Image (cartoon, rainbow, N blue to C red; front, side, top):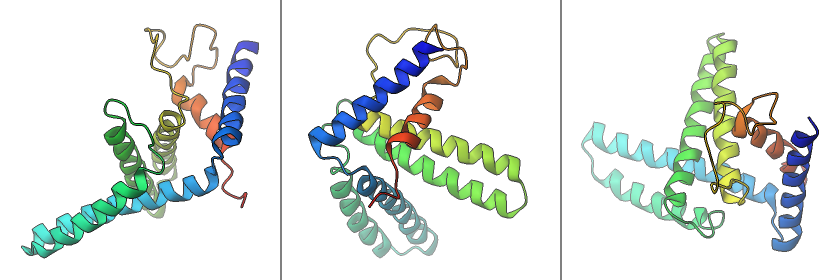
Length: 176
């Protein structure tokens, strides 16, 4: 139990240090990430509208939005390695879609299904931040229990579950 608390506290200290050192404005970055999600969604709508109506001029609009999305994503994904750029884009896009589907399920009175989708959306969103804040360390990863963070993890929420706890503590969108 103490190991888990130490891990979370270490992550919070790392985030606080990054905020001070890099002058990160996580509230603004969080707003920007939501805007980027919506731009990805707009790209999809321009694609489907162009295809359904047979009007390729929608693809020109898609390209303009794509260019804007790329420019804005660079503000958060600063030093992408490997496929971090595409991973980031797809994490945001998937998170946004799961939120939308969850909202529709909620409207249909399917609360349990909606909550499951919302949890998955938040897990993906947390993973996006974990990767782009340098919190996710992929070195030295080895196979352990599917949901365990490490051999000392008794709650077995998995890394994304723990990362969600960190994001809740580190990113407070109400701070202006």
